[in-house]
Amino acid sequence: YALRARELRKNWNDVSGLENVLQLLEQSVELDPSFAYGYTMIGIVLHFDMRTVGVPTQIWIDEALHMAEISINLDSTLPEAYLLRSYAIKSKFGKSQAVYDDLWKAYELDPGNPTVMFVLGNNLIEDGKYDKGAEMVMKSINMSYTKKDTEYYVQWGNIYEKTGNYKKAEKLYLQCRNLAPGWSEAYTILGRLYLKWEKYEDALEMFREGLKIVPEDPFLIDQMAWTYYRMDNLDSASFYWSQYESLERNFMDRTQYVPFRHRLAYTNLEMDNDENVQSLFEEQIQLDIEQQQGLRGYGAWRQGSHYYDLGAVNAFLGNTDEAIMWLDSAANYGFLDVSFASEDPLLDGIR
Image 1 (cartoon, rainbow, N blue to C red):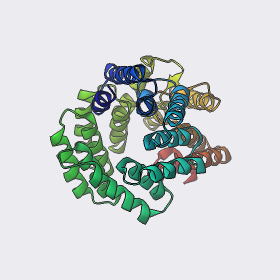
Image 2: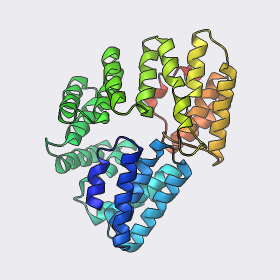
Image 3: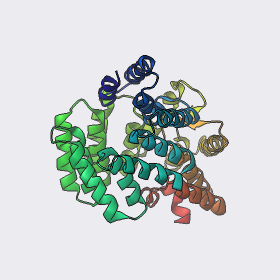
Image 4: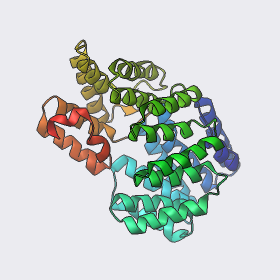
């Protein structure tokens, strides 16, 4: 059951697909309550997948952490359980020594585990330890995948994209798409590359193809909006950001929300349409503050981005000290993408 769930998880595109994955995993631990790997997999699905269908952020983090603790108590030699706990701790509290303790414990238990090497390597790279981190990441890719695997092309393409070799990245991503033409992520990564490359029409084509497969994918909707914004097509950008209103209404938990109001407000303002602009900014701040208080969560965004949004909105409204305070929290939390922040129009006033 766990192996079937793991295979299904690679290709789910809607809520029912995700529910099938969880049902299989729940059956695995019902059959054997001491099956530590089953609990770990449940935690991984909760941590990485449930947020995209509107499950409260507080629940998926706490439950994922709970699943990790159960797994470790059942089998203290399972490296994936320590990986899961490191993910959950980082999501809930930001990067800390406890995160690295679990990552190094997983590595100590299984130094040849490619997933462990990949996660630890990327964390080392984030902290500026490039040589050791890159060595681990590249080794993990070659151990994990063959040229028959989509992830082989995704991971290598990502490395070339990060180093600015867009042509090589494009070639690898196209090979991934040709291998899995029904996988929405293949179009997402190509569109993201073209957007960064300023090939806007190509980016739109890829995002549209992805939306044909997953019509309500929140990331693809956001990327469509940003692409149109970069093209100075403000009407279309506003249209796509406004799509989140209906997306929110479909969330299973109505305390969840999508951070789009400040983007929609700014775009409308640039179009000289100041109707509801002030109220949109105020509503975004109110929702983010409520999330900070634990009353709300993002159904589709990683926890921690509300720090950035509070910084961006306050920066635009001229509240400089408060903006820098929130951006500092975002940085400490591990949610401050410098390349994105360098282009975010809401930060122009404090650049």
